[in-house]
Amino acid sequence: MASQNGQQRPHQEVGHKSLLQSDALYQYILDTSVLPREPECMKELRQITANHPMNIMSISVDEGQFLNMLLKLTRAKKTMEIGVYTGYSLLATALALPDDGKILAMDTNRKYYEVGLPTIQKAAVAHKIDFREGPALPVLDQLLQDETNHGSFDFVFVDADKENYVNYHRRLLDLVKVGGLIAYDNTLWGGAVAAPPDAPLPGYLRHYLDFVLQLNQELAADPRIEICQLPVGDGVTLCRRIR
Image (cartoon, rainbow, N blue to C red; front, side, top):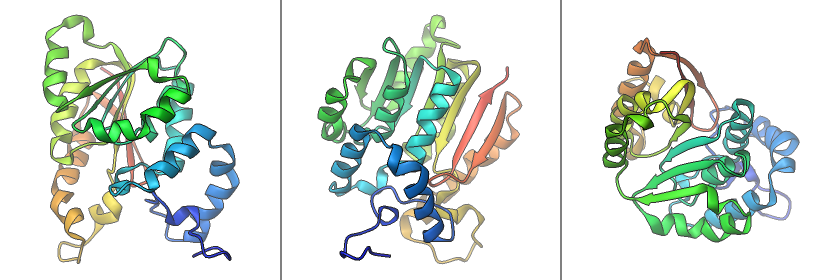
């Protein structure tokens, strides 16, 4: 629904991935408890990202709020992010960490990260970020070679190539501490995970669906973690390492 002046409402903008059936209900959530409390720097980055041709890759604004609170509640200090894009989720994390907190951030495209970097710098949190350009798996394998990295991360957020989600999980379990969290984004995949096999789906949903289903099955059967799958954004699964 457009507003009276013809502009899009926030639920129609970048990052609108709500699984709620009612746009009006999602708009109520945004207007009541999300947008009025969105930090100005995050609002700025969200608006910049809205003009980027790949803006569908951004997390939703309510998911950013959720990640920020989650990190504060767990008092995370050392985190990792696989898949950065323009950095909206990265900024939500950086704002939540203490001043000496650190984020190892990885993305295959530095140009996307540089879209949001001026805003991150203006927010005075860039010093918390160690950005690495390139595939994440070689970086994870290198980290695993040093046993001091095992169990050293408090929190990991994964929002990257779906075909490697299972490969990430099999490595991250050794890097996150017992009691630490891993959050996987897009685990409900626009609702496609529950669609009939012959349902007409957009090409990108159909292409990656099997990878998302494989991850969900592996997480559900993994005895090393407790899980909670949430209908926030496009679906977020929290994994708490218990051994």
